[in-house]
Amino acid sequence: MSPGSEILGVPLIIVILGLGMGGVILLIGFAVTAANSAQHRIDERVSTVVDRARPKSATVETNLRHREQTTGIGILDRLIKLLPRPRLLEKRLIRTGLNAGIGHYVLACLITGLSSAFLAVVLVGLPMALAGLIGVILGVGLPHMAVGMMVKRRSERFIALFPEAIDLIVRGLRSGLPVTESLHTVMNEISNPVGGEFRRIVDSLALGKTLEDAMWDAADRVEAQEFRFFVVSMSVQRETGGNLAETLDNLADILRRRRQTKLKIRALSSEARASAMIIGALPFVMFGLIYLVNPEYLQPLFTELVGQIMLGVGLLWLTLGFVIMAKMVRFEI
Image (cartoon, rainbow, N blue to C red; front, side):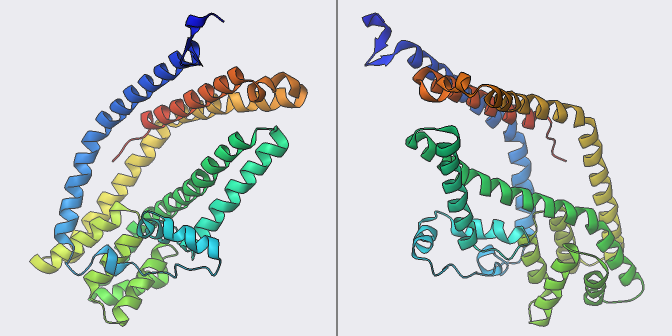
């Protein structure tokens, strides 16, 4: 290699690849930021309306029940104290509907990270430094993704059953029952997670909370804009008056149309999502097949510097492709 082919001891090709990837990442970051700016403005407007309807006493810090932050294991307790925003993490765990605290989450991260690093060293034969980096990434990323998937799945089940709950409330109001008795009907007739959340609302009312505060507590536990629409409608009706049954009936119809539109969009984008999954899984499938047939053929990817750079660049571009395709087939209603 000639002297001019290195910069400060680093091969010129590596410097060029690094600068090129950095520029591409910056361009993609700017593009994603510009694409999300319109949705961010809409979210801010929705948040403004919600904050106006929310009573002053119903804040996240007072509504969310503080869970025990100690596990009795010294290293876990120290890790919990080092978390930057434990309240936000606790809020996400509550939205899963599971009885899991921050200690359980940190323990899952440790087990996932150590297991990933161990498998990377024993099965693949990676260096300790690279295996440790993979363990940290998977230990932090996989539990975070699992919690997000559980929150999303629970929110989808809630949204699917919620219009039926509103219909029960409407029928109760039209038959002359008060709102609290209609909530009892929803609690007994609708399955979880809707029935469970309304049960917690009824329990909060029995303990002396106001209806608005109890519903805003539930809104903080449920990751669904539809339920916030319901709470805002109830709050505004209590202040301005009017026919609550008719208001909730219209809201149930809007929520059903909103869900139908989402399902239609999901059906229309199913081909693109299937193509993305097939294209994304193909490199890993081929890697596994080649590794089973001839493991020595892939060893340079892990033992040589050029191979490690190629492997890192390939994983980076795959990740960027996943993100871009996910953005292309995602629509907010």
